Amino acid sequence: MSNHYNILDHGAVSGGTDCTHAIQSAIDTCFLSGGGIVEIPAGEYHTGDIRLRSHVTLHLQKDAVLKGIRDPLAYYHYRNDPLEPLPAEWLTEDLYCRGGRNVYRACVILPGARWGHGIIKAMGAEDIAILGEEGSLIDGQDCYDDVGEENYRGPHAISVHHCKNVRFSGYTVRNSANWAHAVFDSENIHMDHITVYAGHDGAHFTTCRNISVEDCAFYTGDDCVAGMDLVNVHVRRCILNTACSAFRMGGTNVFIEDCRMYGPAAYLFRGSMKKEEKAACMPSLANPGGITRDEAGHRFNMLSAFTYYADYTREIPVQPGNIVLKDCTIENADRLLHYNYSGNETWQINKPLRSIRMEGIRATGISLPLNAYGDKDIPLHLEIVHSDIAFREDREASFMHLCHHDYVLLETVKIRIPGDRPLVKIWSEEGEVRLKNVDAPNLRVEKAEEAFFTQPI
Image 1 (cartoon, rainbow, N blue to C red):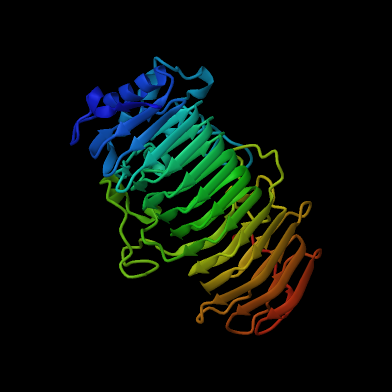
Image 2 (tube, one colour):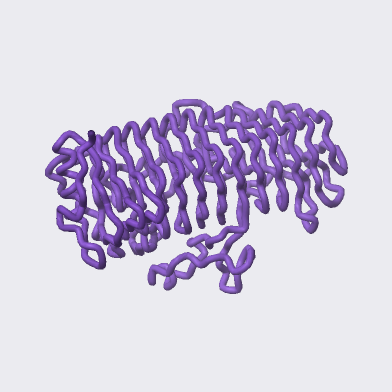
């Protein structure tokens, strides 16, 4: 039977008291005894960073709340960890480390960088879990950090580096000051029955292998599920509501099934807030009735169902491709797909995407063309089959814009789009477009006469 340790026995007190050291004491005792379960009972426990260690499960009981302290300097305890000191090469005083081509600020994020701070932090651990019961919550309180990312983002809710065999299940994250789940250089990660409200990215994975995300709900101001340099990813039966992209992802063997992606967002994109609003740790505004932008300029519109992601923060050793979206519904996204390797988008130009397939897609309320701008040396293979896609009635546009593709297939697809624009518009000489059993107002495939755009459109 597993060892159980209650944080109350280590001095934690529900209310406004800083419980960082009490929670860490319970985790450390559990770790030193060979592992087990650390219990967080019902109540509200304020904390800075706590480090989760190998073979330890953090269990949030019914109505247990971990509330992140709003001081960004409260997240440095791991720097003086006597049990598992960090390797010197993991530590840096820089917020970012310089990356490669055209990367102006992002980098290989080191576990000990300020950018990687988190309420719950795991580094070099294995067999760890964060489990929650009904009503359990991790609240980031939108902690403001004026020297953080974009001069306002504070710690992640959960920050994981170089870990194996990780499980997240059952709890809610609200108002995370940066990503709700930031996972780097890790493998065998399972996430289920997680809910994320507001904040930034719901789950973001970088250089990770073997990931499953099931039965989760993300209502985020930033991307719902994101990541790059990924291999073997399964996302199933999730709800994704966002003011950015439902998926912003680059990887190999990525399977997305039976998900609902929709906009406008329930919570605004925090980047559209004024500086004084961020500095006051103002919670993300809820959408007042399905608008895309309010009078103050706060943005709620959903940018894309799927956006490709491959920047120079990491090397990408495995060729991205074999991405499949199957049996998904998409409502009120500006774009169905946004892939712009041929343009000047910093976040997409490390290594191109080889192939993506959409099958059984039911999309309504699309307002802009699908972008598929590939690489001349590694052109894109794109298939959309057995799908029904409808644009907004007030938006006249082509269905698809292409550049540097080798093969595009539309088969058994119904496309409802107003106006008389060409169905497909192409900015390159090579490549084949095959239409099989396509129901659309027109089936014209045209070579563009104008120069290729350098900005995404």
